[in-house]
Structures are given as C-alpha cells and as structure tokens.
Length: 107
Image (tube, rainbow, N blue to C red; front, top):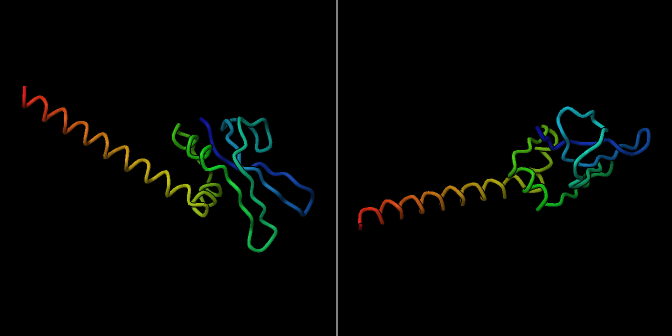
C-alpha cells in the first residue's frame, strides 16, 4: 500500500520534512516513489509547500496519508479539493445512470 508521509531531512535541532509517496513497508527515511512537497516546522508560522496536482493524483489512486500529512493537506486545502472531486464524480455517475434508465424507457 502506498502512503503519503513525512521524510525527515535537515540537521540536528533543525528539522525539515519532505512529503513523499512511499510504500508502507519502507522505513521512514527509505527510498520513496515521489516527493510531492515539503514542510518546515521551525519558522512561525510553519511553512508548507505541496504540489496540489500530484497530491490529488496520489489520493485518487488510493494513497493513505499519515495523520500529520492529513493535517497538512487539510491546511493547504487539498482535502477539500479531493472531496469536491469525489462529489462531482458521484453526481456525474448518477446523471449517467438516470439517462440510461430514461433511454431504456423510450425504446
């Protein structure tokens, strides 16, 4: 299973994290599939940069974010965007199903 989680970088007492797509069996700082952003917790307020397109892609193919990454995605507005995508997909599926039923009644 693919997860979205933090990979620690930086020096002692200067943590810096990359947000990566990684196989769940790999260690925290092991080989990752793709880096989709970074998180710097030291400055006030903390700095976050996430590639929205890639994050949405990984969420759409079933990647599970860790609790911390889920919080960061929520702050960046990406989870809201994913929710809206799912709602639109469901509405489109419902419309197409209704059209099929309507067309079957006409024949």
